[in-house]
Length: 242
Image (tube, rainbow, N blue to C red; front, side, top):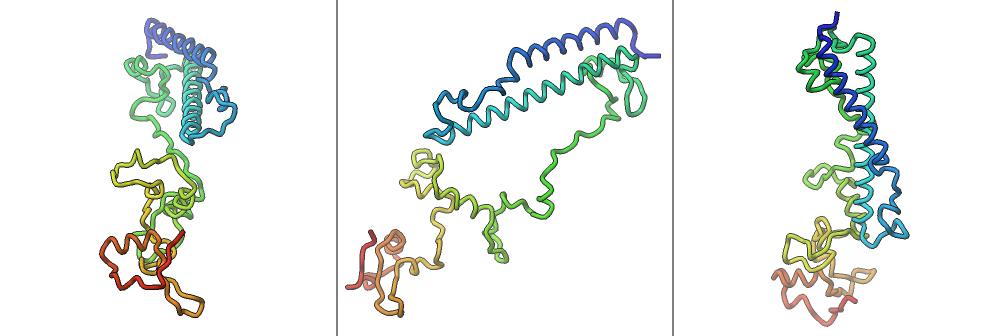
């Protein structure tokens, strides 16, 4: 015999029917929360390629949000319909794990409840890609600069390689007021690439190691400005970099 009386069952059924009507109307009138709109129509442009990469990124985020909201509403509607079916079958309000009655107060707060609080199964965690079992930590989120025993191409290097082609960052938005160039916006913009000591980047020789020349590049200017170099560094072989 069900522990809920006729009045309680009637109240819960009415609540479930209201939820069903609201969810059905939501999914129908909102066109799946706008998920059916194409990116091009959402942007209002003739092409999905925009002058600013963040515009398209915002649209992708909105479509992902729409999909999540629509999926959540569909799952909730399925739970409501399942609860109404259980009510018709006379098994509503009985815990499906222990067979114990679910308290009326809990059903009032959550009419679709299938379990008592003590027997509610834990929610499954999001399943990560199986490849991550062999990539610890995941490749895309690694930075091995601080480790002396790791020198391979890591996640930070991957981002830097892509970042060199441009991002939506700008000097005007930088926290550092001294940033004047887009090049300075990159991660570790002052990182030495292709050489170890700054001196190596502006001293050059011929193929035989003779005829040493000094190239006035950016590294040279910074080297001299920092007081590391001496005037004797410059001689008749100095050349400008164009």
